[in-house]
Length: 206
Ligand SMILES: C[S@@+](CC[C@H](N)C(=O)[O-])C[C@H]1O[C@@H](n2cnc3c(N)ncnc32)[C@H](O)[C@@H]1O
Image 1 (spheres, rainbow, N blue to C red):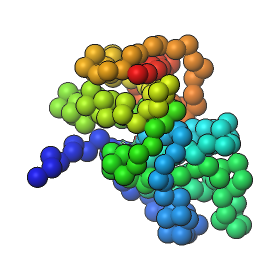
Image 2 (cartoon, rainbow, N blue to C red):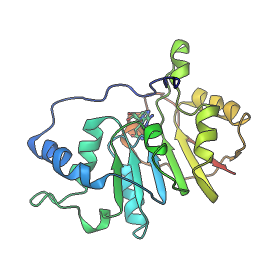
Image 3 (cartoon, rainbow, N blue to C red):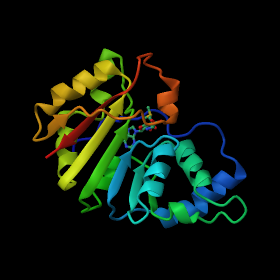
Image 4 (cartoon, helix red, strand yellow):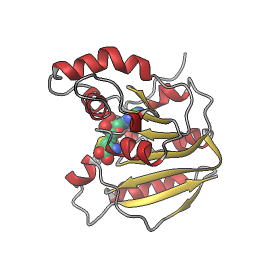
């Protein structure tokens, strides 16, 4: 029997969705199911950065994975016309996997140019450490989905998790560089739950 994977995310449902959001989940979401793509964002939250990626890469397919359905609903609302519920032109490249990214990866043979993970859940309590997504095993899995010049871009404001990831990388075939990047604005980044000065970023390549 296959080993059960440890859950890396918190809740899947939050406050009740609006009628429009529920309609988008029921009718639009199934049409945006990803198969292959160029850029992947894991754990997109409310999807601000998925939208930036789509606007900045109009010819690319951007796949966002997120199991928190209120976040998925926020992204669907933001990429559609309020009256018609149709996807706005600038967001036509977006596809959504509304579940655990590990399940998506088992279905695709994509080789990505970029894989983004912004503010992965830090699981700060020692007894929850095993829930951290960016462990060596998963980073090794992700490396198989990178194209030759592909990059995994990670950002976190939780500096202890950042150092922990650097340790994990030693057990992978990936090379890490610490870039000088502008801060990427996302909902979680604004919350700054870790209370640090700024997020730290990491680029991993083969
Ligand atoms: C702390 S939030 C950050 C959200 C967003 N990136 C931001 O910066 O605002 C981490 C997100 O990762 C998602 N997540 C955790 N494990 C995941 C997994 N295995 N597959 C996809 N998303 C996951 C969670 O549901 C959560 O929304």
